[in-house]
Length: 171
Ligand SMILES: C[S@@+](CC[C@H](N)C(=O)[O-])C[C@H]1O[C@@H](n2cnc3c(N)ncnc32)[C@H](O)[C@@H]1O
Image (cartoon, rainbow, N blue to C red; front, side, top):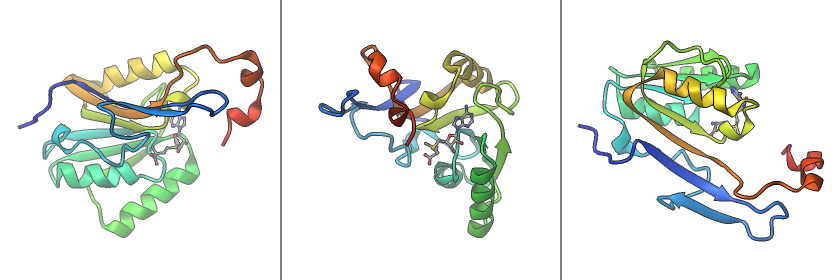
């Protein structure tokens, strides 16, 4: 039985443009971009999970254990290097309930209403079309499904000087 109240679990890191008063915020306040601490009560065995922008697949590996052999985990990422890495690691770990797919959050390679839980760590802020990404997440979730994500948001308009500073957009 799934034991959760809210359908959306948010974690955040509030950063100022100049880095002077960075602050971790959370609902609940537990950490910044630490989705590796997945909320286990969001998952039940046999759930279908999609990791949006899975990178090397670490959250998929955690989710794999939470949903068990009857569950399925799909990791989606747009980068070939990350997909190669995540597939190799899953093989090494002997995890058979995970599949990694090439794709964009804005055009998810997942069928309608397939996922019980969608997870994402540090990716939505990178999407060029965030509304489309959110619409896609909504499309792939089953009615009553859950989204747990950790990401970066800014509460004030970004000054033009910061917008034009490429070092602030790349890491
Ligand atoms: C900051 S890393 C996070 C990786 C992973 N979620 C983790 O926590 O380790 C961002 C990942 O998102 C992927 N990514 C960025 N924008 C994307 C998009 N629009 N669609 C799919 N993947 C995207 C990148 O290729 C990269 O692997």
